[in-house]
Image 1 (cartoon, helix red, strand yellow):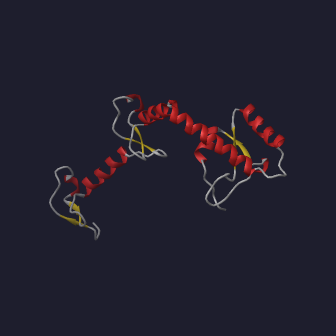
Image 2 (spheres, rainbow, N blue to C red):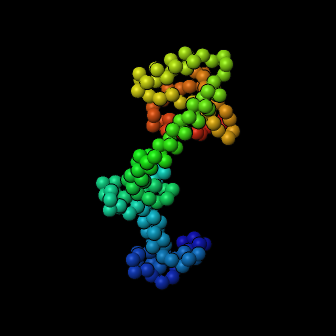
Image 3 (spheres, rainbow, N blue to C red):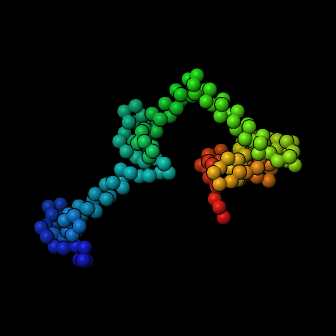
Length: 169
């Protein structure tokens, strides 16, 4: 027994603890431990996902949900497919591609050759991977260059997980 615990009424679920209770909320120590374990099971965080209630539309996902808005991963995927198929979704996609083209055009220094850039992209395509900018082209702290010195060839998933992050060393 510590300063934060006292002996009180014996709990029906945990008689083996002999009435050990917490001073802060007067709950049985065993019941508090059970609550924490139950919450940990419900909120099993896997990057930006957790396991929660099972969705009726996607039972094969076994309750996998997004941490951001607690929606079912399958339902979110279905919604994004609908948006991308719509005219407005395609327009947004085209507009983003145009802007990305402008960013890369302005980020290429005059001393870098387009042939060198193309060679790196061709090599990545042959390997079945993608080209990642080590220093992002567009970031609030830095502006990277679109040149072979700032490229690395990585798997698409690795590049997607990195996103637009930049670590200051």
